[in-house]
Image (tube, rainbow, N blue to C red; front, top):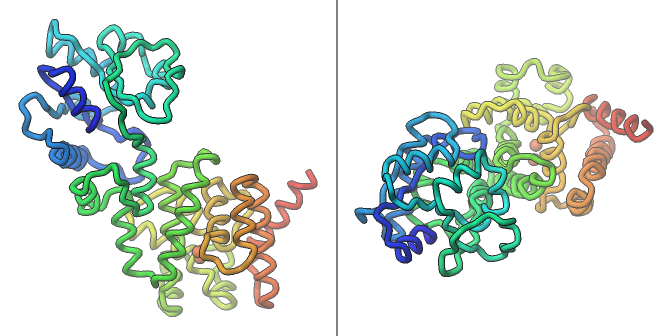
Length: 364
Ligand SMILES: [Fe+2]
Ligand SMILES: [Fe+2]
């Protein structure tokens, strides 16, 4: 918004178009529908004092095509719409570094002049010869991926106007609906633990190539069935996950473990998110299993190493996770097994199989 306001002041254009895409730029678990994003855009324009100005327009060009639209196509569309006009493409300097990776970037430059707002911490050399006009002034550093990660964790990024944030919460976007539901069904301590697990998972996710949204959703939801009363948990598990490995023995010897498999079913019901990796992460967060996928490994570690855990190993595993995630994963398995065996009860065979598979890997 600040970029747009500066462009309006400095260039006094005939028209400035905001062009929401049909898809959000990353694969969304529960996509924010176009109408919702349009409403948020209007709230943001209103907050910036830009709504209602005759030259400010919202274009449905990209959304109307109902597919991913490349910038060169959008530029071509507006050239046709305003023949003979000088067309600018407005962006933050954080996008300049990757500009030459855009589809047909030379065509974009033929059709439009890049108009760039400088964000702090940006090195001009990263433009690598891409010509552009700089807007006067400095603009806030607000990469949309950082904003989304903060929203997934219930944060209130100061860059977002209160009206936009209220719109997000009202519509339940960015996992705010799931957070509100969990607050209702979990004890305050469990909710805090779920939040801490998610926050740790989001901070580790980029290095592991895992989308922040998946890390946040799995972390938040992993214990969603943990506070069901024992009878209700057993009943729900019999109904929804009777094929969980060693179901009968779990039911008899360690029914609390059922919260993992029941949790995956309940998470799908609560959130409407259907995602095999998230299901796996919730199912295996307590026992682990050989051959777990990256998201399941991440949640397994973060559940054990979340900041609120009061056993001393949690902090060590957490520290290790930032330096050597595989080592942290092995350590988490060791800690979980040690506690399970010292309890003297039945230990789920999946946990032991995981241990064995990790030892074999080490030998191999
Ligand atoms: Fe759990
Ligand atoms: Fe947990």
